[in-house]
View 1 (tube, one colour):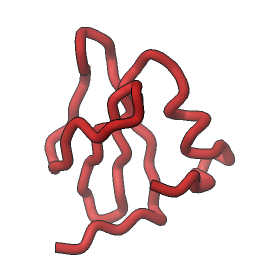
View 2 (cartoon, helix red, strand yellow; view 1 turned 30 degrees about the vertical axis):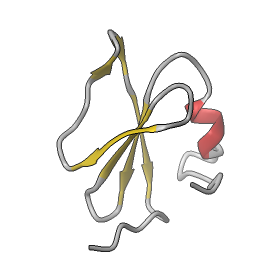
View 3 (cartoon, one colour; view 1 turned 90 degrees about the vertical axis):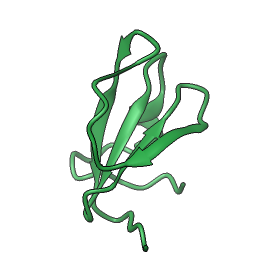
View 4 (cartoon, helix red, strand yellow; view 1 turned 120 degrees about the vertical axis):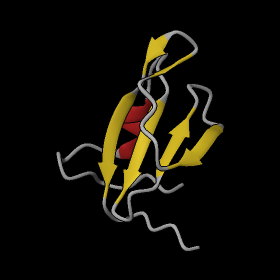
Length: 68
């Protein structure tokens, strides 16, 4: 996944840094849950409020497209 600039001005990798999982919300509605170690935990449409007992951080990433 590229280190895109987000609408809030931050880079995606800055938002992913830390002990939390990050849920990347795409413009098509797909949600990519990325574990704290950078691996993808899941891809789907349901929100993930927590992962491994810690709240996830959701970031909107309008430039990422998921094609079916």
